[in-house]
Length: 528
Ligand SMILES: [Zn+2]
Image (cartoon, rainbow, N blue to C red; front, side, top):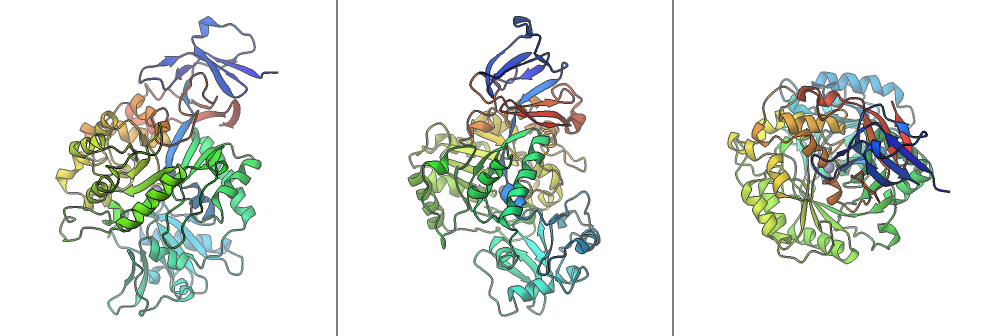
């Protein structure tokens, strides 16, 4: 027997266009089979949504659930709670008594030194105040860098004689001694390799909890852009489904030339949790001036970091083509962005319907660059962010020249110029607690204002409906997650009911609009 639910008396944003609204819809066995006007149907058993606004289940197309689940033991050190080195030491010291297992590390994540009064990076000396007995490590908000205490350096065997890993640095004091600051992923990995991994059971439970958090934000589908820190992400996420995870998950494991990925089976590429691609990191991040740029950073001759060589990026692309999945390239700096098109622009796309090559972040996008993307033979998509300039303005202020601001995260230009486009959170690599609150990103897209009230290229503003499409119907064009992002016959009966009408609230109240209920494939997954 078919299980049919009729939802009426709502303002339903269907995702079909910026202005497509309905007032009712029906879900049969978890799938939408009708959308329209409540006056057309009469059913006593219908679910009255009380006139509230409904949006298709939201898609966060660049986030890091595997990293979050794998580091669930880390205490949150994000702004606005941590705004100084002292705050950081206080939070970690408060967390230390909870770390009881004999070999456990005291871990934190999310600090943003650019928001500290003197912009000072914490060092091992600061973290030694938390503990000298136990290793301590805190990931910086960009998740590309970290700082650890002396005990952690000792355990990792990093001394004055240890050479820097390729594309990364162990920062050092004036005597050449490592000072605990680990810049870029290879340096961080040299230390985090010694952190005992959570058990498989703990990993699975952490994924289930994350799925509940996603549902509380109206998020029903995510792309995991690195799938790191879990023993076997595909297996762990699928085990989490058995324990109740409802989120659809597309995994993008990282490309490591030293440990090539196994070839995929058809089964790996289908289902609620699937491998959707491979990720390559081409450069660093603007927020700590390591994005790879054409013109040097202000007051320097530094062009940032280029993290992989062409041949490795091409090898990752070859693997993606051979396995029929996407290549996702982290590229922030204008030079890295150009490199992506240099390397892949003339190639024949290998996927139908969705971009063969996704560009992650894409900080500086000029009109010329949009033109280059559209002229290319390759089909490119972009996952970008407005929460970045909102939350990390202090870093961008130092890294961007004034004339670059209009080209930084120019959402209006991207909205018009790049069809496969999404807004996303990059949580937990964004310097804000709860960065995956979709309404925060939407408010930033609409107001173009930073957390501290500074206008950031207001001419790039878009409307709420446009921003909502970048979390729904347009976001679904960026990855192979099917049947999400629209309330249309044939799509999943996955949607969020909002407490207030995000389309009409004053723009400075968008971020305070909360999700009241989330339904996934016809089942209520969250109610506030
Ligand atoms: Zn990321």
